[in-house]
Length: 280
Image (tube, rainbow, N blue to C red):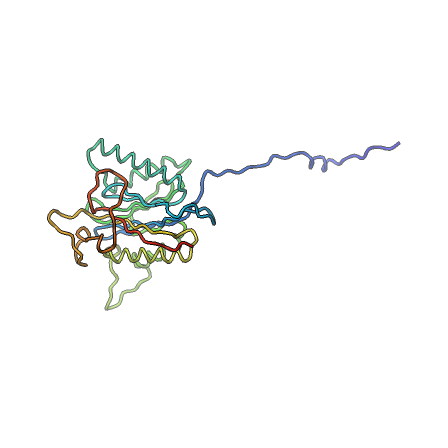
């Protein structure tokens, strides 16, 4: 009498279907980089315009820098959808403040507000790194950098994004004067003392170098200049020794009026300079 072969317990357990795990992430990293540099009476906030995922370029013009009001400009980088949602919420809060108080929110108050908004979403955070630049209550340039959950600090310069590891060391050396040694003929300047032309040149050099070495940075560069309003009766000037508020940015650098943010806008206070970067 023949018996049917018995399957071992091990082989039987192997034939049982096991559940398949499916992972989902609500976030994405869309490349690009941003930076901000504070000057004596101005601030430059810049970002490239490439948006990508991995090796795929989604668009060659996606702004990362947004005018908020005459005193503040925000650069945001990371997940593009979260960046747009955060910028829209900030602009809504600024409009509400304007209606309630009849005046613009100051730069330091905006920094505190952004920190609170980010911290309030800490359990499902906005996947963005933000840099806020502008002019403070004393008329001095200021830069505030944020992490995704709201920690922030005031600095002379800051870079963020895909090419941060390339941009930040360069800024530390050229703006914060790290690892530089004075000579009898050239003392080390104070951080934040460069004029506008020098800051714009350093910004362009930073992104040109990052574009050569990083595939997620490129296509175009937008540099927003935030400065004080010129005093009444002072005409625009092209001289190097003039205050930044009195410079004719259109003729000197090809700047145009920045758009967006609060409707009430003082002409010539927030300007933007656009340059081409490599497209490959």
